[in-house]
Image 1 (cartoon, rainbow, N blue to C red):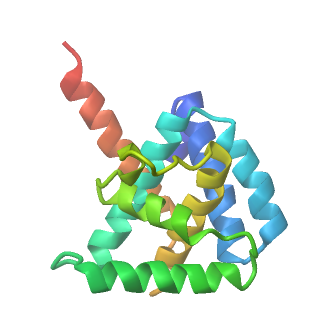
Image 2 (cartoon, rainbow, N blue to C red; image 1 turned 90 degrees about the horizontal axis):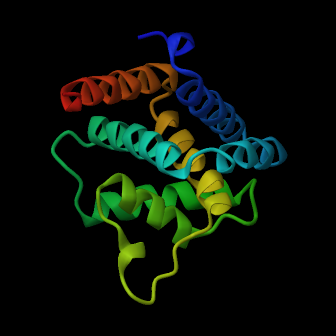
Length: 160
């Protein structure tokens, strides 16, 4: 699947996410804020699904035997430390929500845990993805292609 051949809504998600992850990878705070603004303006369910699937693929690739609490802590601490060095408003709590969501755990559904704003999620999810892509260095496009191919297969299987 070629990302250029995606339907317009999916292409908009892929393009905005690519811009945000690229900015985060370079530690360009202002560019990330701009790209995150575009991302936050798109359908939050679609963007959340794509971001979560990409993050999960990267996590599974880096931890083929599964993640334990120490692995999750290491990812969260490393990502937070790296991002806070160039983006002072990095919020470890939002990164934790993004990481947990990618793993299928949704702490925001529990009473007393506020759900981060779409703007906060649009900043922090690309940060997590950029961090996961950094060691060893990988490109985002193959993961986006795999995610959209899987989503297309799922739609085809669900169609009557």
